[in-house]
Amino acid sequence: MKKIFSLLLVMTLSVSMLFAQTPDKKEKAPAAAKTDKAAKMKKDGTPDMRTKENKAAAKAEGKPAGKMKKDGTPDMRYKENKEAKAKEAKPAGKMKKDGTPDMRTKENKAAAKAADKK
Image (cartoon, rainbow, N blue to C red; front, side, top):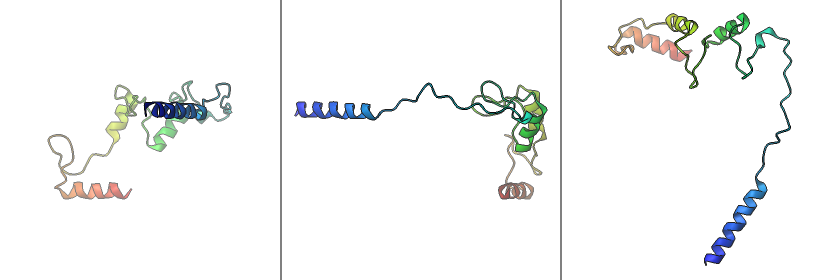
């Protein structure tokens, strides 16, 4: 029984190795034409936020114009992100002690429904 099991195991491994594929390292993605000023990118592929065009595009998309952390949240050490946070709408009604809107008030319920419809 052990011989049959080991034979099946070896056959399974060899078949799986035959079908394994490795990416071709010689192929490179075609370089994009840099004719548009709004498409200026850094070497790592992220938009260069030092240009006015990219800042305007980020604001139009609703993304913060400043730098982001690795987890995708805005880095609050930068002025652009602090300004964007200050411009966010605050609820019209009362707030709880922890800073979240108190959903027992009419104003906050109406604001939440309006935000859900968007």
